[in-house]
Image (cartoon, rainbow, N blue to C red; front, side, top):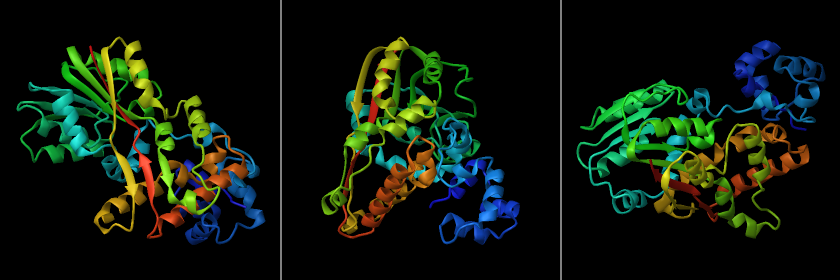
Length: 361
């Protein structure tokens, strides 16, 4: 039996200490509950359910959670604050640096200085890639909700000679005071509830003839491009089909896991012309037996272990319509894969399904 104590505690925003105080137990006791070292006394189940505002059946993993109880708010700043560290590591897996240089110099062929506006700029990652490759005099501006990310971006660019500005604003409400040559967004449209509105804001910030560039993923492509040696070594062990989970989140307006492939259509609907697309060249190969890839392998493991679905546990899948049996099968796959990745002879291949879609106004 797997009680959903951790999942419900995190959904409510409680720390282990806060839950322990509410239950009048030690935080070590709560930790043991969450790690299945021991279980709450039967008399504590009704109180725990009351603290979380759910039924005992939900707490015991016998009944799915309602959508609103554990829905992840992907377009709210708190979610991304929690993901700051993993996102920094994650970004090195998007594409190879030489491929980005190839796009800037040989595909897009920017020959004049440009003013760039980055929607969802974070700590200025795209600016740090673009500016060294663009003609002198190019500028970079970014819109971001997270004040901490903006301060980090300002600190980084203060050490350079580049002209940069940052705006702490909601994407839906942003009103540009000038027009830009290039408006970009990385993994933004897949995580907002109203991508068409954001696209409209991006369009309004472009100069006539300016270029929009949107980079986003299709995780079905990534799923199809995954292979692990575990499949060969253990008969019947294959990566689960996550499409039902992604469709459930899309239905709830949480996240669109196929956004990368949909962007050309959305740009057409928004009135853009000359729509073109490329796809990332990155194929990740996890190979711990290669000492030359030690840091890369560690980063791969770090990102893998911090996927939302993996960290959410059984409750994450129950909340997305999985049966308890099916949810436990997925968790078992994660555990088997994690154990396999610990071995020196392990190996995995994962395709980066990131699309670069660009068009003109």
